[in-house]
Length: 204
Image (cartoon, rainbow, N blue to C red; front, top):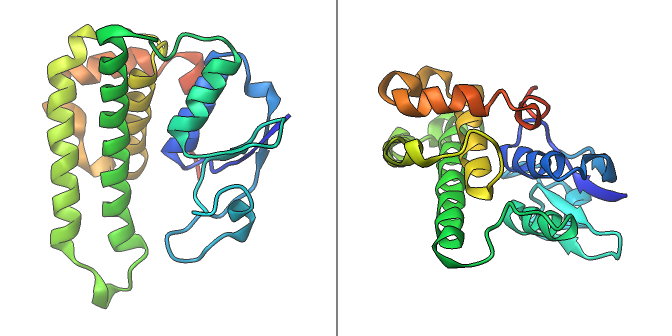
C-alpha cells in the first residue's frame, strides 16, 4: 500500500486519484486524513512533505513524493501507463496543458484564500480579481483548444484541465464559466461523466 495524505476537496488530490483510478492503482492507495491550510500547518503532512501540502505520497520503498505532478508521473511509470506521452510534440503539448490546468487551480485557490482565510480587515479584493482574470484567460485558451481534446481521461493534460473545471464548479459556481465557453462545456459534460471523474468528485 502507498499512503497518501488526502483531502476530498483538493483538486490536486483529485488529479492524483483520477490517474490512480485510470491506471488501476486506486486500491493500492491508503488515504490518510489531513487538514492542509495556508496558515495553520498540519505536521502530519509535513512528515511526508516539508511544505505540508497535499497531495503527498510515500512509495512502498519509502520515498516521499510531492506534488501532484510528480505523484501522477510516478503512478504512470509504476503502472506502465500512457498518461504522459514519452516524446515529441505530443509530450510538450500534454505537459503544457497540465500546466494550464494546474494554473487555473492555483489562481482559483489564491482567490478563495483571500476571503476564506484572511481576516476581513486584511482582505484585498483587487488581488482576488487579478487571480480570477488568470482563470478567465485560461478558460479562453481552453475554449480555443478543446476541439482537439479526447473525451476520456487518457492524458495528464486533460486530467488536469478536467480537475480544474471541476474545482471551479465546486468553489466558484457563481462564475458560470459554461455560459461563455460552450465548446468547453460540451466537452466537459462528457469528460466529467467518465467513471474515474465521477468517483473522485469533490465533496465537503
